[in-house]
Length: 318
Image 1 (tube, rainbow, N blue to C red):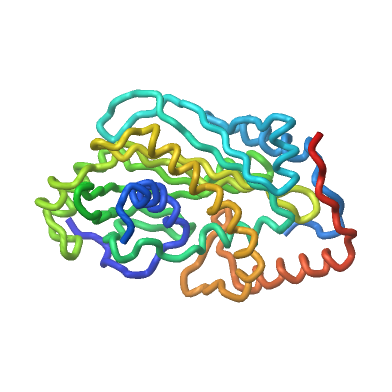
Image 2 (tube, rainbow, N blue to C red):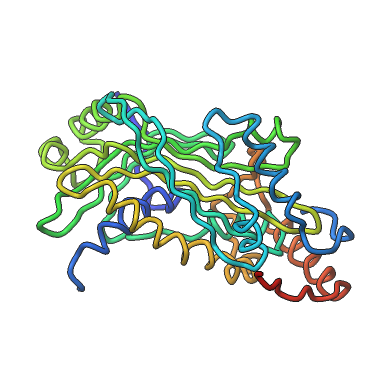
């Protein structure tokens, strides 16, 4: 069997799937374009209609924010909702697993927020070994990843598929873009074959047998285009690390890190048009390549809108 040559280039969008594994573990370790003329604040029903449109076309769906949660979103806060959903793990078992959904509302164009989320560069590169197994020309890919961890925590590895949910984009009339990831079915056998064939530099089947294959790693970035160049983001993550680390603890740590991840997109979106390097292409939710000119134009349109609009005062909660 032959495999694509290994690459050190970071494929956009994969960092979140790795972060969902590494960030909870790191906590346990010792310290070492819409039309810019449509102005005005996005109303609550605009947010809710976007989520409702998604839920009409997704089998699992997203939790509908309450009226208080919508008010918090419009005030710029992160809203997190924790639910249990039935899932199949990498060993074929069926069990309810914890899913964390983090919402954040931005008065920024979706294109810039999308680029900011998928262009966060390589995370934990010193601990991560990965191998590209397959990729297409629309942003979908299949990867083997091996995360080396210090004692007493065992290494983790997995085979993960990243994809753009183009059918959802079409079904919602372009309102929703989604970059999703999940463990590949039969991934453990695929991983051991890959290691046995010597396809991954520095790793072999002994490393695979000693490491823990992740039971669950699935999630996605879902971004809704709202009126007036505004965006609602939903980051959803389910991670089970296996071994002695409880699922509930992992979920709590992932939830904690979602605050900084989501809030950080605001600042990143202000400069992404200057930093976006099309040497590696990021694709839209309908699998179209994004050029740097598109990012610059989105930023320019945002700047034009800002000079024409009246600042919206923060809402006060009752």
